Image 1 (tube, rainbow, N blue to C red):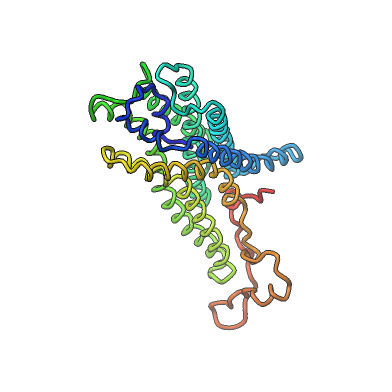
Image 2: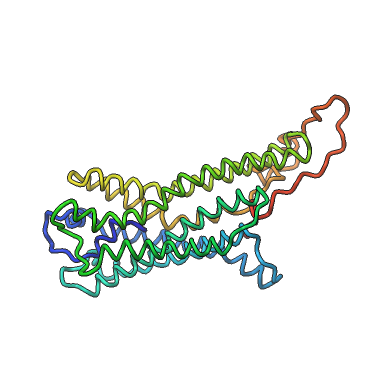
Length: 355
């Protein structure tokens, strides 16, 4: 998982029982925690490959590039793959050597822990920015505006590099000592920047993305209704399925990253009266949900069928006829006029079937 609390464990410590990190380790089953991380990161890697594989095959077979929305999803999957790989390596070695928290004079473990933590935090931060840009680009697509690929890449890869470097440099440099700080002010200056570098991008996506998808849903409704000058059951089904897709994308992000925000809030509001068992429970939830983002993304970002009955795709013909929605009659009096072709939803919005 990607969490600033775990990253503080990479620091040197004195073994003082008053240190919160040491008290947490006394009640923490590191083997079971690392086993959860190992399984979830493996699933995350498989989910990322599941996302990337069709694009590679399509390029080999046809030589045709992907749509703009599909390209964003691929880069999101690549970042998820590398982040899950970092969690996999860290949990595997921690299971092997049993030293989540380095010994007081163990410089090698401190170096390894800090490098893997930086790797994992960087690539997860990249996923948050690509998630943000997918929502922005969806809205731009519906508006008929151009994508800004170069800007997306510059921000998605550059800003996380800066925030991760600054946050972890303040935490670890010069001597990787972030435990038993003399006062609260020292803790704020030493530890808080890394928390901000982690949690502010998550909060940004949680606030901005739902707004962008609400605006996109309204624009889709207009784009579908205007060519026909009416809004019947056929058009309504298209809009409702896309709204459901947008909703599920937000649900997945909240499911994967809300526990991290809750953990940060508890740590900074209850620092002197920390509910250790609650914190450990949240860590297990994060260990499960953070790497699972890749698999859940593969489910929600894939193409959602707007032409067939979406809930029962394998139903028989008789049942299908029973549940089939017939198009509403024209709002004008008289017989149904010839139907115009429904304006196609831009492929970068509802873009592909994963396999």
